[in-house]
Length: 358
Image (cartoon, rainbow, N blue to C red; front, side, top):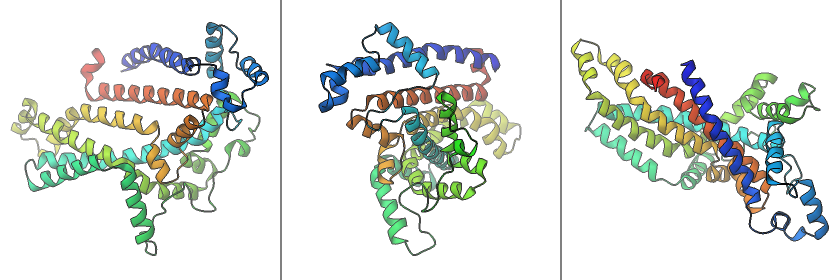
């Protein structure tokens, strides 16, 4: 397993180089004068000259690329043109919200998707199977923004004065906020990548509650994640349910499953130890794809529920032509996809030991 991990890590090197080249080229391939494109109406000859000097755009491409790599390694992604703040600071504020939403949505969709898929496979061609697959088809075809608005209306307005009320927007209840860990630990002067990590941990509700002991923050965050998690997790749940059903039905007809039954093994062990493990590879693939997609930002869900995540921040940066923010978020999203794919590869090797020998 260790050798397999090392091989996969070495294969990530050319992928990371390609990501750096693409994100570096985003700004350099903009048609026309980059200063005029970024500054718009504020672009004057004096400001453009200072702009080109500040960002080193007068240097050779190789020198610019080398500086870009050094800046990334040191945790410097530049400053936002719109806010005048470091891009890493904006990412550390917005990324935790998206991670929390993604994890909660994928836990919901994976649990219920696999559950419904297994039930449908075991009750093949029965009424339960038909109802489950009809529900999965409805889930796939249901627009996220429409479902989000419907959930918000029902749980926030229809059930407003009942114990089943769920807040329709925001990340925390009124009066609940995160405690800055950098101030708590006396690390206000910390900079670069270490400060980014501290701020990222600080802005994650679970870790903030863990280090401060204020579990009210974590509880409030979970409470506000219920509706958006259901809204954004419905489509992945339906896809996972359909994939689980088809994959398990295929495996159930294999010879080793019939052999296990012929040896007198109880049905529960036949399903859990022999059939389900071999059926999990395509399911894990779907889970990895959906997780990577959600981590890149669920724009509609974040907009409907007023969540300050990656998706809404990236859209706002594109509309405002804030290219350093676009470049920074694109780099982070690409790295997240690579890490998710690495975890999927490792899960393949765990589920099927033959893959380790490839």
